Image (cartoon, rainbow, N blue to C red; front, top):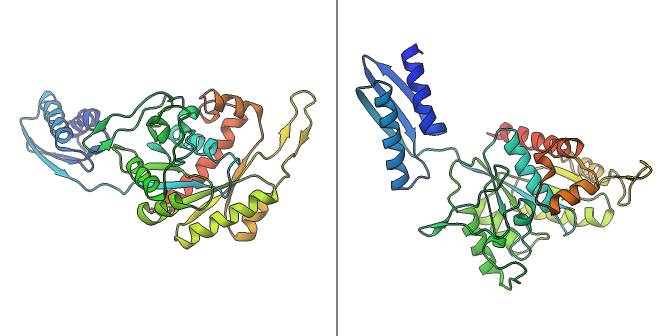
Amino acid sequence: MSIEQGALHEALGKVAGDRLQSVRLAEGVATVMLDVGGLDRLARDKLEMAVRDAARLAGVADLRLGMTAERKARAIIAVGSGKGGVGKSTLSANLAVAMARLGRKVGLVDADIYGPSQPRLLMTEGRRPEAEGNKMHPVPSPYGVPMLSMGHLVQPGQAIAWRGPMAGNALGQLIDAHWGDAEILVVDLPPGTGDVQLTMLQKHKPAGAVIVSTPQDLALMDATRAIGLLEQGQVPLIGMVENMAGYICPHCGEESDPFGVGGAEAAAKTMGLPFLGRVPLDLTIRRESDAGNPPAAGDGPQAEAFLAIARGVLAWLDGKR
């Protein structure tokens, strides 16, 4: 690439970002290809104008601009469990934040229609998504992860009493929103194996799923049911995470295991699943999560636990593409 062409590529990249597919400069003529997949007419026109202006300012007199709507399919990563209370939502939020910290463009969908908690976890309570046509724009979070949740659409504390088809339609609106350049959607599934999970498997085809369980036998039994449903839906299983794995007393420093230890890792081995890692039963995680400060956004062992899991998920995902 010549110096002139390199300078042009840099100038256009500043306005087009990852939608700039190629730049070729020969005999004073610049040929530029843009990826406009997922953009409406207004957004395409704005992008074209910005690129033409940038090319003109760079000294290009003859610009030939091509556009294509071919984009990589957005990968949906479902996070599920067989029962509630195992920390699935906390894991989902921190997994999304950790992947964003690792350089990926990630969105978060709170698919727990009846018990949404992600607005609290990512400090977006009280905010409503904007709509364009019949699609919503995700709510930006302070951690670089746009998100959508039923918690953004109803009053705080309002009960949602919907039958299965209505919940399934709501899930579709959350997933089919204007996610822009997000390459990965982390979907926090409700606990169990009900209508929302079936809709997710049948209509939205996750690229893979992460199963969350505590070490105790009862949670593992329910996690096995969730795994069975995912396998029936032919959703690849990325691996299992053991949450609430060990507690260190802040007073004496002694470690104890109120929910047992190693159960999820042993279950993963028995079922032939990768074990993605464990997250400790830690007061800091509970406190920061309640305050809307996901530990994965910070430093220390709590953040590293989530980053290690995110690296495992991304390695699996990159290996499948």
